[in-house]
Image (cartoon, rainbow, N blue to C red; front, side, top):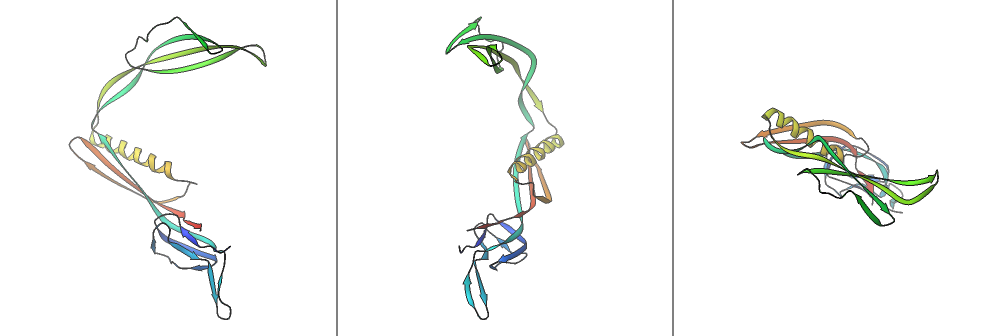
Length: 201
């Protein structure tokens, strides 16, 4: 069927190879999402214009930016080594606590694990043992130096950008800009990536 190849995102064209159809952009052009890159038609000296199923590859520079603010003074929740375990038994949908009680920690994380009882290797009883582990959490005031805050901001920004990248594209450049304020540090990271941006439409 007749179709064009269009841009999937904003980018700068690096290389275009129209295997079928007519390229309508060139190296160095800035395009936006939805721009036609290869039109689904060919024009011959004797045949005139005929419509085709466009095919080809378009490589382009794409930019991903992320800005992160890191407060110089933060309250962080830190897990201590203190834990308490509580147990219960579930029989069908009925649960029995062994024993009942409230957690002894003011702040805590809870992890629940369960295990079904079995008589044989493949025969389970309708009884489930449940273990509830509460780990104590305390709040601690942390003050960062500006250089440490810059590093944390850059690391977090890079992590968020890399979560967006697909198929391990080639990273051409990485740009970092930081700005120090009275109460926080702002870090902005931009990745310049080489991607294939063409899709059939």
